[in-house]
Length: 556
Image (cartoon, rainbow, N blue to C red; front, top):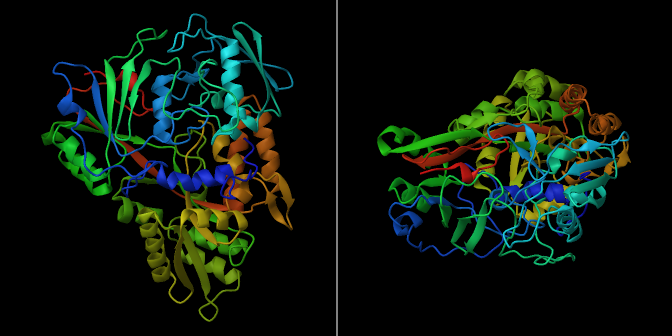
């Protein structure tokens, strides 16, 4: 999990590639993206599940535009598949509903950590069975973690970079030894893919996956999976609290318009991911008269601009500071998102108490006087203007609008001093160019793999190989296109990973935020808001602070 620039299939670090992949998979509020790697859905929609359901049933009908790429926990790496796995499987640790408090789930206690910080001993719950009747124990959990790492799926590096060995040290005791200290490791064990699967039904082997089925320990069983629908039935043998409904019927729609129209005409109990801003605004306006509720939640998705320090002009710190001062986040929020986003001033999102708005404090929003001073310090003037390029993935209409909004704002605010060129590239081409340092700036986003500030710092600021002269040659910052190298940042990341005292660890994250504003390898831009639309009579619907959606709490 070192974010070490591990080259993926597209010549881009897995972490960096995932940032681009999120354009097509995560919480987009502005565009009608169809997510996943499968073929396009038929535009002809089947009957809505609500329309075809049995009268009086407490099954919940939900609509989405998200697609299911795979349900294999060793390979699933999109948010919607993660939500499904979260509801069909359990993990060693989870979060107390409605909070960010990490608590045991299939573990019975928090881990015992050795004095050197490398060995985690975890007692396991007894009396748990998987959906196929397999008894859960330490051997099953060891098999599942080994498979997660060794099969080489999209998220394999999360544990593969961290874990040295996994042992069943007792029938109901697991011992995990790490390669290096990592205080955030228990949070990583809450990742949706770190869930037990039966050894008789799954196998360990690189590329050996079961995308169309799932057997786990959770409150729901997979009843059916099709290109346009998913059916979850209640696991009658679940060890924990049973679901408050009789099951979940999910309809996958080809477009936000179809999802919007079906929900608006009461064809669904719940609509979730993804409607465009006009549709969201319409449902908000008609909430009282329409017979539905609009539930708003923040997200942990961060949207940012990466600045390449390998090439001019962004190799100049004053130019990077000037760009930071030019950015008007409030303009982006109002013009592009109609107020349905949140300005972001740190790479650590606002959901963490340690969030510090360092970019607001240092650069403000659209402060063109400050930007002009930085540019003059860098040697730019009306006779020697700055020519700046902003790149984005060509399939992202949202980022096209944002890039052109920035262009207009900057050129109006600094006429004759800055000229902005907006460019786009197909995502595979863009990912290769980010990895090799081709672009000055690129608009990207990031969704955390687990809920810990480390997942917003280490993947961006660490570098495994480099120097102040060469910048980052191999590591996370190289994979994210900034090529940032800072020995201080590396030392701080090592320090926070080794620090078991929460207050002392928080202080390190504060230092990292301050350093990010001083060196400006990235500019945080905004966080989206997440929305769930719920018909009257449907209760206990909410998005967790960790961005999970607990389907088993919903009642009708």
